[in-house]
Length: 483
Image (cartoon, rainbow, N blue to C red; front, side):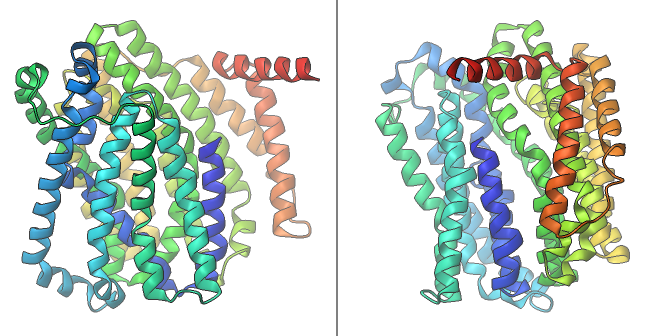
């Protein structure tokens, strides 16, 4: 629920406030800086974030909390990684300026803001992973999904009333993750989980070689994957300008709504999969893999079709230039649904003995994504980024699906997968005929409500997902008892 509220607040910021109160270039800059920081997190943490999730069960089962040195070494790795990043930008500064100065001069003007963005993103990611391994994922999610967006709204309001200028806004915007980090540190301290020790534990001595190999191998996998998924704004900024990045920001935000459930399911499933691999519990792994696929597909189809049914109304709420992203939304949404429908394939691989395949498949993703984005954006503009994303994500997930099936005999699809797709088609066809009536908000409400009634009713009646049925009916029983 927190994630949905957070995305609603984020929607207000990105759809209604940023496009109307900031220039297209300023708006694009507020998206480009954190997206670059996100790409650089694996480098600056030396991939210690997934390593915490993968190996923490071994530390927690063999060490007392005060002797657990995993967090200490992860933070030390992050300081080393950030230093390497800072040195690297110093040497490659001329190349960066040449690439962006003509089409995106504002990015070069505020390039220095990349440093606080990257550092705070990286350190927060380490503590977030540590907190999740402690099975304390709700508060970090609250900070990242809701608190961050509310603080952004406060800054936008301050800028609107001219309490701060654009320079102060961008500085404060770049330091927001520092506020989240401080709150998370206080939270962990209150739960008595904030321990640091430079004494090398017996677990570290025994597993250090495996962890180093895992971290540096996975570093490439995560970096390649993030680059592939975020390369389009960087190419657009250097070839078309920050204006197109602003349009793509809106498109990306809308399509990312589909991935909201994936965040929660992934946060819950990752430690379960890590523990299951440790205990060699293939039945549990199969259960998580299959259920995650079905649940994500149902949620993904629902959100996608609500978006597409109301796409014209949505763009009526924005400045006219933004409507050129309509069909990019379609291609990106289909790519997101495919990614959701294949389940937690990345997490299954990353926590298994074949975790290196996460690197190999990510190399394939980048090898597809970079040239596809470059050439398709050159020929078709922003729409080309949609084509590139759909093709690369489809191939990427197909490769992982086949590998997991061949190596482990696991595949997530059942007859309920076909039921979910059939329900989505019936609900869409039953709703698409509704004409435009009075106002975009009214149209969205009517069309969305009718689609939801048809979709949810059929999902429950056909028992597509036992998890959804049990959750809905137990909630109804609780409400009846209260009544």
